Image (cartoon, rainbow, N blue to C red):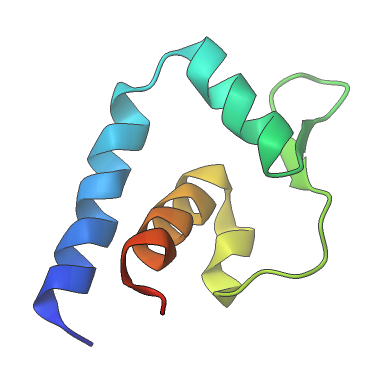
Length: 73
């Protein structure tokens, strides 16, 4: 894997960390993550992900999606 792709992915984690709750909620909605009744846990509602570690959580899913957006042909 190219260094530029790894760097983009890791920088996307920093971007995620800087997002406010409204921005994260917008991502949850658009990428089919759903807050559970306890409002503390979240579940992925879509079955297909291009990179399997997206199931880890929305932060990893977001970083994977940024990476793919920038480098997928």
